[in-house]
Image (tube, rainbow, N blue to C red):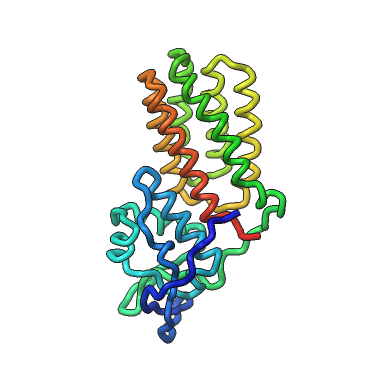
Length: 262
């Protein structure tokens, strides 16, 4: 289900701490792969994925301190603003917490946030679910860029605007998110694609029910929606497919980082 990590390498010392408590130093031996550079077009989501997965697998142990921001930015190859977005998302999901002072920093939560685990079957095939969605959504993006009528584009823009007001309410956000993707499929004029999109969104909703949804993640997702709609308005099918692929990869990274372990 999850990517395998390389054998641990000594990445230097870290401080083990619980919320509000000082603790003695311990060694944090996270694998090099945890902090290797991420790709630029999904940097935020991949950073959440990388750190969240490392936490879930115990490669970053409960109570351990993450490297300093400057070091993390350099090793991951990302900007400080992108790192802070990712850390904010992981803080809001309960995976890390920050403390101030000389012994402060960003620490892995101890204990980690509880959650209702998904079924073993769902965990075994969640990437297949993402693959099925990818096949549908890329075709929809291409055809929508060719066929979308002005009234469909206006409806899609209204949905994207509405999503900006729902970042603190995932239930409302998700309902509107589904409507946006189904509306995009409707813009192709293909009823079979609308049905396929509806099925794909239903399967994704079942998966998304098992992860946290920090506003930072939702804001990033809707920014991708806006780039997608811009490509569709400009009849640029190639760019629409590219942006849609990035959007779906972003969701997959978030799932990989925050989905509970089996």
